[in-house]
Image (cartoon, rainbow, N blue to C red):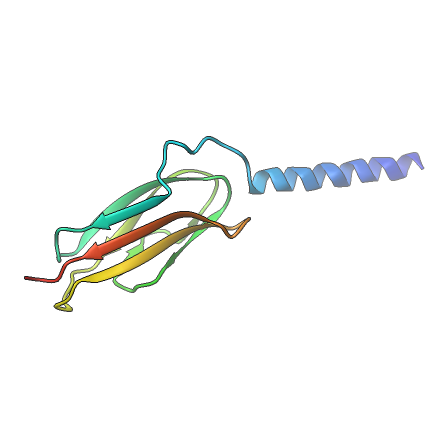
Length: 119
């Protein structure tokens, strides 16, 4: 019986350790959760966005012309760099990029980017 409680204690400790590694609490008040970036150039450029994640994260983008340099990462403070291609369409275009927590599938940051056409 004593052996049963030891195994149970080990199992519970392992489970609690995994959960705390996946979604730790931390102060993320210094970072925005929404960015709206109205670019003033149609030329290719790179933008940087700071954020905090309390666990593993990944990125989704709804456009091919606006791509992150990293698609995933881990707990901590980060700067996501996004490469924006030159706008050759002749029209204004917009993109949405989402940084999502792997553990909860909740959006950590939403980035809206608008790029003008060549005038």
